[in-house]
Image (cartoon, rainbow, N blue to C red; front, side):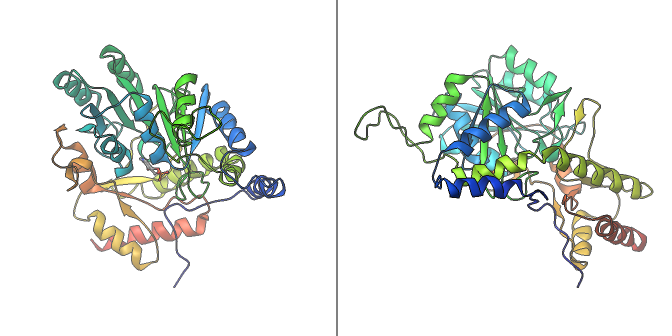
Length: 372
Ligand SMILES: *Cc1c(COP(=O)(O)O)cnc(C)c1O
């Protein structure tokens, strides 16, 4: 059996930057939550994406949770959430006992449809927050979404877990709304093994998130608490990995974009394959090259054929309005996301993948269509 080709796996720098920062943490005995790497990582991310403030947390999910709290979401509040996404986007809405209303995607961006967002804002005039996602590194149509949120006086949170390094009209995704979140889980474009970051230009709210995420300890000699706390802060060791990874983010984006281009060029003769939409205003990090199929071959046919060659691929995210846990909530749309889910899949886009390995994937795909 040939070597397994993965969708996206951890890729540490050739220079060993990550280990230098981790070694420093060990040498100074900062093997603890908080510490100089945490502060350094926060500052470096903020500078990189061009935002005022950042709070390093244990996961992207925790960052979404804290963003909702920072936005003042309370029990019974309406949160308009993109339906086509990973469940981690929507789960924190339930943590806060708020009510998700799922909004469909459009074919132009695969992300939240501004048309259906407007419909949802009219149907739910008391909406508290809009939670938009930038899937696979594609950016949502942020001009329209930001304008709608301003018009309706609603807080905008961007789930940029998959889009660190992606820009919309020259600005980084995650910095276009009121709050943005990034994830450093093992399969993301850069990883700390696990971790997340909340970013915002609102210094006071970021400070408050740091307070909540360190058990909400008030200033006092004894342990004093006036609010509910969480143990959500990133550790100094983990942040060291992040500082090293951030140095190679641009390289990773370039490699992922090359992978996308090479698939597109190599598979252009197969008319049944359509590639994810790349808009002029979107410089995508191409986290996962994704395609949709029309014709006889289904995503599952292709996934099984690739599996036989020891190649990992997977369907697009199954929309939240189709999930047993979430289906009781309202959904605004025309089921574009259902169609994308039924016809879509993600191809291996590992930044460590060699051209020979990518050729193996391409050959296996061509084989399926030749025999169809
Ligand atoms: C990975 C991911 C998250 C969650 O991030 P974690 O760090 O794994 O908690 C949230 N939203 C989307 C869209 C993701 O892909």
